[in-house]
Image 1 (cartoon, rainbow, N blue to C red):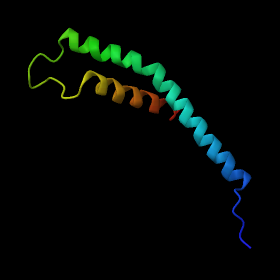
Image 2 (cartoon, rainbow, N blue to C red; image 1 turned 90 degrees about the vertical axis):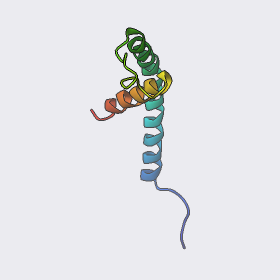
Image 3 (cartoon, helix red, strand yellow; image 1 turned 180 degrees about the vertical axis):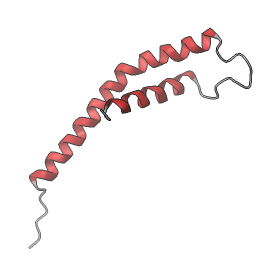
Image 4 (spheres, rainbow, N blue to C red; image 1 turned 90 degrees about the horizontal axis):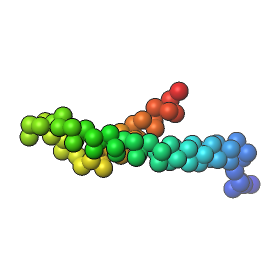
Length: 77
């Protein structure tokens, strides 16, 4: 007979993944405002004055990608 219950190892692994997702989300929420500020400051400082050097992303998309990249590095250590 086949049982449809999960083993303790599978349940523990699921909980660990959920915990990592929650930690990633919390870290993202802490880092995002800093990345948004940096993106806005960069645009206001005029680092990309030529039309060819202007970023194609919005400030929010740039901050989001920077925050996810920074938060991802925290989990590699």
